[in-house]
View (cartoon, rainbow, N blue to C red):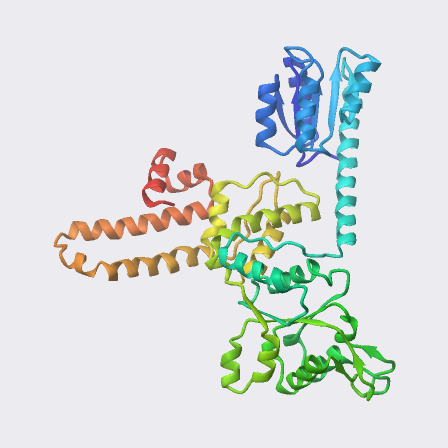
Length: 471
């Protein structure tokens, strides 16, 4: 195991040890930070997420190593902390291990021994983290018990759903594709009184009429060619639990009629069967269509609509609730960092703003996919947003041009009073200057130094322009 992309903090008051250990771990690919006292150590720990800490038990003012260890353990239970000291008593070793030290080594330091200890502890921590993640995934069975949002409209919908989630009444969730309708359905199920029963989902748009009937109601042996054995359907599988029907607006009228009968009678027959099968299933439906428009066009049954629309919740697109982007980014970064066993450094303000400037036509599903790729392709713990190529065009040429035109329209009377060509040129210049700077910032991932080099201006000038245009 090498130490590529690992971050190691060395805390020691002896300059020679700091230099020697920095060279040692850098040689094996680690990114090394050093501190000579508690103040510097706290600053480094606040700035970065480390994979291992090498800590001198006795710093300049005495036994401060134990104090730093105690502070680390309050926030980082699994971070490997290896003590080095010239005062090698059994009491010190026992006390350090009781306080949460991962290992203990005496001065003069044996480089090979220390290197092996660090590798071993990092690997052990990674395995513990991976096992914890897998256990959680197995134990939770991918249960969703929270819905991440800061949007008041969504919070109001969740508050309403919390009041009815134990009643078993049908719920209709509307919203564009990718806004998190199934996640909300899982939240309703796994926080309600059916949480220990099955949660079964089916995408009605993914199957033709015959296959959908078969999936929903199952079939008897010999019902059709290839039906070699009896197969239970989704309604049977979801008995006592929840059945989530996604994209119900795509369901054919024939299937709608059969679904309505099941919802009214709580029973059905398998395809090719005559026996009534009774079920207790709470149905949650979702659609990105305008069902009322479908009803007008005779593409959706009005009686079924009333039956599934006992309680209705709407999820706005992510572009209309940009306050949710940051918590969602943080959630997905943490999720995929664990998935790929990576350490991702805290996201900077400029990166957040890159995410917030994009319109996310694919909503949360697209955001999740982008974070997945960004974490997977990250290097040295730095997240690199992998946004679509058209992002900047949408963010600047599209939105900014539209906004500019709207501003011109609303200020038509004011523009008519302008007689100076210089004023007009100044307006046009400012508009394009803002667009160019914004594009350059995006291309550099928000890195101001790189942006100023690309634009051949000083960093001070760039900051002045950023403030001027509120970028």
